[in-house]
Image 1 (cartoon, helix red, strand yellow):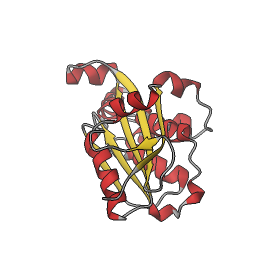
Image 2 (cartoon, one colour):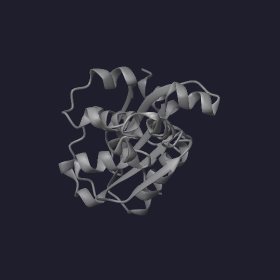
Image 3 (cartoon, one colour):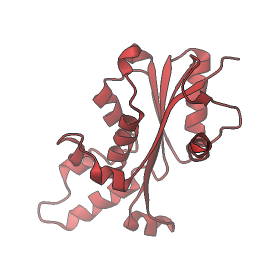
Length: 191
């Protein structure tokens, strides 16, 4: 079996987004896209080391685009109606597109709504099958207070990113029992 290695890992929160300075377009993105872009930027990966079409992207969004959908829906009561700029982000895959555009990544991509464990497994499978040479795995949880009320859960705004490849090196090997990004990052952070 082909071994997969974790080259870089990051985690960001809404506070990190507020402190980020990534250009004027960054401020126009919805929260989920901001979190995903910032998590990938925090990896500090030099994507020029790989052909852009051989870098995959797997995204897991816990609540889909519900936070942005709710904001867009509320805009119907405002003068001028809902924001056309916000409409772009009413798809769960919008953060994936923003990361791909920013880094000119044209490899396979997958957006999953729900738990990030399947995204991590898919990324590892792509590498083991030789579909990609490297893979960004991103987990995004952007649940506003209004969306949290709809879901009967707590508001949260975090994103995690992991870059995987088949070549040895980096932080450590991805193991069979590494099933979700939150616990994986917690284990990497331990001395």
